[in-house]
Image (cartoon, rainbow, N blue to C red; front, side):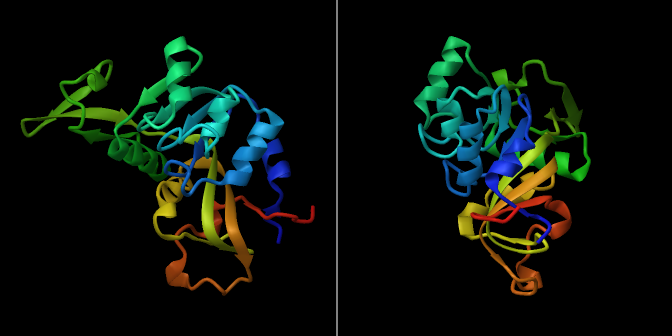
Length: 219
């Protein structure tokens, strides 16, 4: 029970200017209550690391709508014209990263690695300013690891110790991000007694999770 909190109290811990990893794929697998609370509390100057910026008024797109993001590190912004307009106007900095490279950079951050080598982007604008390393005659870009102050993740179920189980494709980036942040806040659909989640179904173990979010949790 010690890990259970409300979205309001959890988001109060997040300062302006924080680096956030937020799970989801165009809103699927995104912790909606936590995103809504970030908007309500007006946390600003955020660096957002996510697969995408979703759509206007959907998922992390709400943070874009509210002007709370100063930099987005994402694989694409094609589904959100608001992000595109803010990038063109200079209101937001966008770093576009190929989706597989983004996943591996997050994985590297969670594994304690400095970065990864990938041939993706060699010889393109994506290589500008990056170190190129040749191995066995093949050129690779050195892509640095990504870490965050907070990871806000979505799970299907959690037990009261903080073990997490995910559902189908909503799993996406969530398990990787849970390993790559200083503080992990999980928003499950349900919280069940310890032992109700089979050990083989646990994807993110409780030792990685700092807070669980539950509607109406007593503080």
